[in-house]
Length: 355
Image 1 (cartoon, rainbow, N blue to C red):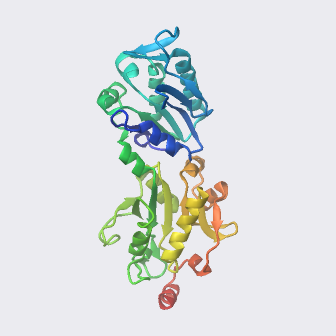
Image 2: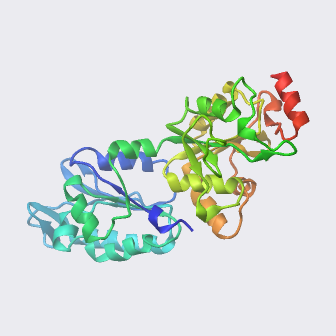
Image 3: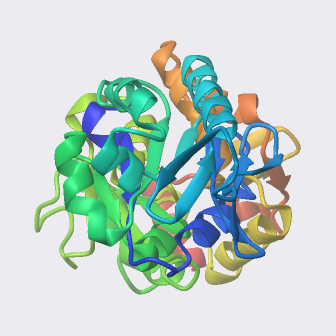
């Protein structure tokens, strides 16, 4: 289960800064979603159901009979009620992202609008579970909204922070000790620098942010003091699954480029090639041979993380089984040597001589 403090996001910024548009652009590539957006079209507020893709006439004239009003703005009560029912349906069904755009003066100051369902929805996402809740609250109402709905533990992002968080992030699995030589794999030199430093440098060319994945972040495991994510207490001793799930606790909105330090023949061209293939396919990709996946030479699309969480909850802790379930695009390497995982001292010395 996703811990409670990691399940609620608030997108907040000034009015007319493009919050709905930013959400809309990102959600185009997200499959498992529900809730609604309320864009302005032809100077009138519409309601877009993320479940059906249908636009509804949300903002109405003052003469409209069944309406809910706040100041000079009037909204169709039927559209509002139907959207609320749909949110509750999606809440029961479960999706990766449930979006409510927005919580405004109606809900915060008058207990109207979507207020009747908000307590149930927010309460659900305050508990461990699957999926995330994204709320939109304009900056001028943010503090009132947080206090009214007790959202002090929610993760608040402005537009720029949201854009950054929804890009591509990198995760370097620095690895445990290589067998029989008791040396961290990430601290072995293959390209005239520590392997984890080499991967960090190369992934940084393609990712918004890059992190080492470490069990313990100390000067011994991270002498270059690179940004790091240590294994979460919720996912200890789960192998590579610990690394990826801990990264998702840091940021569940991004796509994650996962590279292990076990592959000394991987070079800058191979790293860029995989990234470009990901951009073209817009889905999870990995190196491998036909259906023989390399789960630690992969880029995982955000769409597949809902499956990852569900499999983990059911007791499946294998990234390879996860790949078998999502069936990523498999990229055949130009040089098959990049698929060689080095573990013994003899293999290490042979790789260093070749490089």
